[in-house]
Image 1 (tube, rainbow, N blue to C red):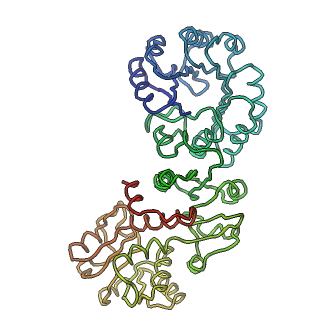
Image 2: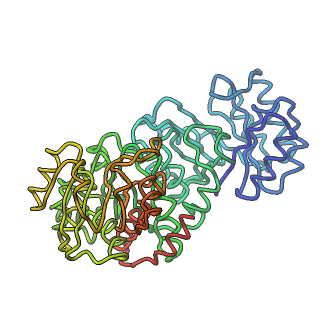
Image 3: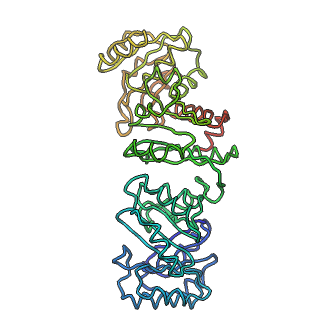
Length: 476
């Protein structure tokens, strides 16, 4: 189930927010410690779905400033008013009496650690169970990605209903996977800015994108490995694609700080990986095989696991070449490539494989020269663009990317009667493309690279060649 904490500061706002939350969530949590003019009777009378009443004291990262006796009295009042659940801190002096008082209200006994995920969670869980709680709740702070696995193991071993999550950015994956692994519920915020704990994800994302209510046991896990990953849009595409093609899978962002820690603990969990900076060259040691294209590029961005065999791929070539060949045949065409980094190398390898006549231009000529010598093509400084007649221009530099949207990598008055591909995603239409279109050029934005690259990854993982129109509609 998905539970939305209500963190409003007045009874009236709490009732309004509870009504909004009930449209998305399976139940709500009234954070009574947030409400200044608390009227529990009024709030509980307005509910249409089950409610947890929680009162967290200031010394436990909450906002309640009263005494323990006052907090206990409020929890007893919640029981008397027919609250569906009350959340009792494991530190509560009257824990045993409150549990016995619960009548038809279910007791959630909670342990929070806002500093770390310690190794004695099983011991804490057993202590809560012995206290007689209906539901065990354990929330800890993830200092490293592998802390989430302690939470998953805790859920797996629990013989009693348990809510278990990791807090913080590194704990976000637990908020998605824990309910699928069997956690009684997960917490999602009503909206961005209304989180009651660090790392909460908006509830509509948990429901509509990650489908935590729908994914079934035996699901496959896919994910992006990188650092940072918070701006990646892959999860907004692949999860709806899994739903569209009826695949029991889920795609997550993994912010990896220690690649050895990740491969040690998570390699067995994932069926397929997307890989971004800074790890495109760091995972070769786990591969059983690598495609010739990826080997030539010297970097992988996709890993496929099939019956224990791990293969490294690079879909950058498909991301660049496929949208190009939709517009123009590459064989025999003159192609000018701006840039000499990783994406430029992928473009160059793809162009040469399609028998294009390639020239690489770069601000640092020595980099262009190294890449050109590797592939057997021409090179030069960016200034050479003035004298080159070209059919296709490909920009794989960062010039023109947000926030420098008024810059162009070459003089756009020279960009006429050609196909122009800009690898930049943001903005979708760079100044280079705007000016090229004015000059009668056929343009291809960087979003096309993302679409085709993602389609190729999906095909490698699932064997399904996805409809590009479906992908475009999802991303809208």
